[in-house]
Image 1 (cartoon, helix red, strand yellow):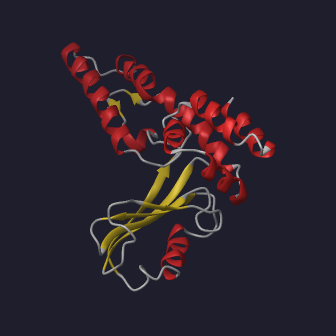
Image 2 (cartoon, helix red, strand yellow):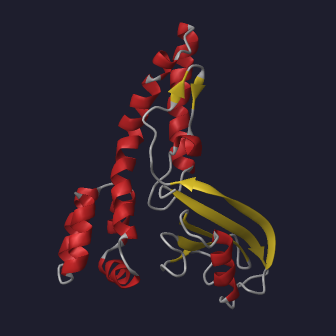
Image 3 (cartoon, one colour):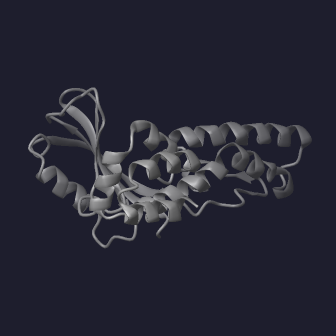
Length: 227
């Protein structure tokens, strides 16, 4: 369960979106443990409003989201027109995603970015690789586990090994309390965030340690997690 998140989302209408040209993310251990709340505008008065939290929490994701909405003047009087929920794998990557006559992609194969929980683009990449292997298997008339296993190597060379590095960044972030997270958020740039979310841990560590050197405890957490 530590490698799964619980997600819950409303599509809402008749709300006041702070700025419809931006996505809005809200963080905090009390607000969304090991996760965040999002508002993805679809216009001035419509948005997807959702939350992702660690799957180990006793309180449900819906409960956390409802409390956030109730405390938000621009959202609490809105109308819920659609509900989506589900489980998001954010780690525990599968060494073998194949069997006789079987290839798995997307959430079924845990092909999700461990930091932000996004997986549509990653699943599309995996589907391309799976289709390449499937075509070759069809041409060879061989859909055995042994033949299909080449998909595993293609996937890890293309994306999987990078996701393993990103998993370390997730572990680092979940070791921060709100005060440390504020220091980190105020110390790094958008480029640094992209480096973390895309698995460039060496580049991120160089930028981050220079900027938070006055906070020894935070530096220790960052360096321990990014080794």
